[in-house]
Image (cartoon, rainbow, N blue to C red; front, top):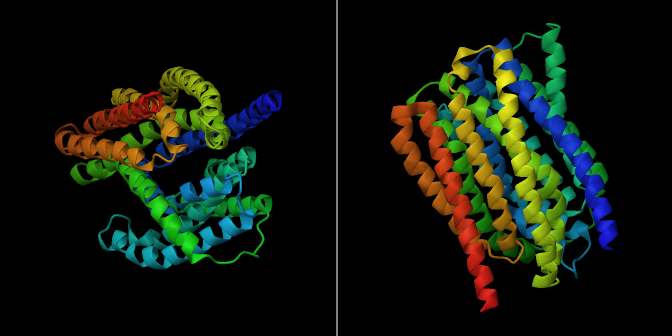
Length: 414
């Protein structure tokens, strides 16, 4: 069994790395295309749109998958169609509540009304695709999950590059939104095929109600984390201009590639096994957790070195003085992502044993520090201030989780 698990993990890790590696490359390509063909300011417009879609996707999801994942992986679980079907019912109800409220984004000019159709098309397609991606991971189909992610966030960018390279379109942000929509819709079709979901479930509102109760602390924690991750862009947009948002978006995208690398090679492959092992007791869990911890540290170190080396030839190619002058922002954001990767070590030590409130408290502390730091630093220091705020909040997130995890281990010993 041990040998089989190692073989599966090795094979899945290689394929995940290939798919996620291509996703990272294509995301790099998108930033390069926008800067080269349009401007840093247009990258800022795209950054606010993309950030807002991402936030709304998490609101629509309500982190219900955190409840469903543990339900699917229980030793006495029902047929997967019951869990998947009832999750769909929950999301359908939530759509009716949240979608109308999201119109305030356009009334307050967070996003221009000229993009309203694209916004809702992308929002719904992104959310459905993300939930399918998560279900595939829980079902131990991480390779297919990574492939659907590549379709949703990568391959369409290559198509965009071809179209713009040969001047086959008008070369506007609308082209980006249109192809993004198509990529997300195709990923949904592929994902549904591999889940092979059957519509023969019974709606269980009691189960859904219990899921809402369980998912709520995770949802709040996620919102706090997203505040840490994205609030800097909104602060910069409020106090400065879209050009500064573009600088932050560009460097943030490259720095976050390190987390994608760690996530694809370690986290999404091993997380289902960590959760299953926790059901068998602390000894079984500790064996897998030690390996998981070492791999997080190892892959984060590799990712940091690769990103640090890669940034210089990329900036030379772009030949953009605005980006080159702000390279310190990149290294600050890379440090922030390093702390975030490290935070996923104690994260699963808490999550696997249902220590949901502890995760909530850690995210709350990080979010509070982030907001205070952004208020204090962004008005005077702009992009640099937002980057420093990111480092402080990610470091506090890691230290908080580590403290709570050690406290949990000490309680077990005593």
